[in-house]
Length: 331
Image (cartoon, rainbow, N blue to C red; front, top):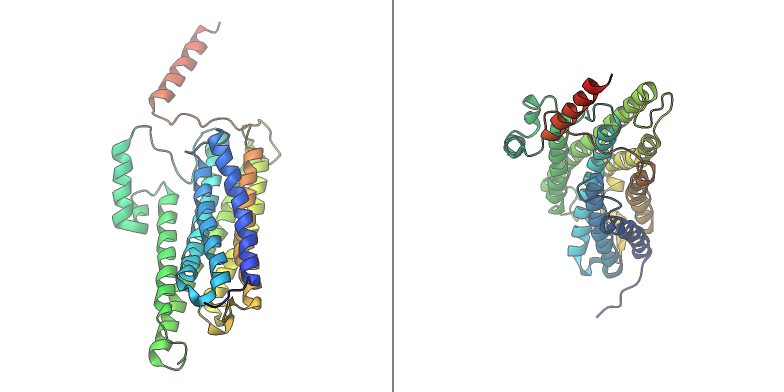
């Protein structure tokens, strides 16, 4: 049996595995001690962290074993793509949650809330979303997140399919017509998918800036005007590593020298030192920083009020009734 070396790639994977395990441990502790709720925006983020822990574990295994275990390499690639997909969705969930907790209406203009117990409507939305995909926006035109979720799922599918299609190419014969066709189709699908993610990141910044402007003008749960809620500042800061990650995704799909599928980016033990630095600096570090900053919103949002009852719910009707009684009894 050949001896395996602990390469620089394995060291980088181990460093970020420790980093993600630290975040994972904090979040699990916060869930178990009820500092944060399972049914909250943090559940989406915890899902991302779990994927990334698994991804880095596979990266560590590949860094040590190299191509003696290609399954670890494929798992590393797939989990890495899903990690970025989940993180983009997380960022939108955090903005929506801020709207619901801090706006006077208790509603987010990105995603109206369903009435409690409206199981029929939830199943109806699920099947419309399943069969119509992005065109579900025609029916749920007042719910932009339905369209955005669909677009991201299609983009993620394009990236995975494009990568899988390229995996069957014979790189020892770059001039072979089949290899050229696979390279072209994969480049188109992966670039298109990454382009949707990048557009989503750009849209996220616009939404954050609009929310910050409205917050400065109208105030929030702190009853202050002329200032911006610290959670929004953190979301604004978290956007920058996300957009770097998005740009890197586009470059990795369209520039051959940055591609996972370029044989020149590998040696017998795994990634070359150059490719390891590029991948972990622009692909992994950016996601870890964004994840860390999103977790920091726990500190800035601890004093935020609870979500208001949904309009039309029994709880909301009772609240209105009590308020009316108080006003009628006031001399």
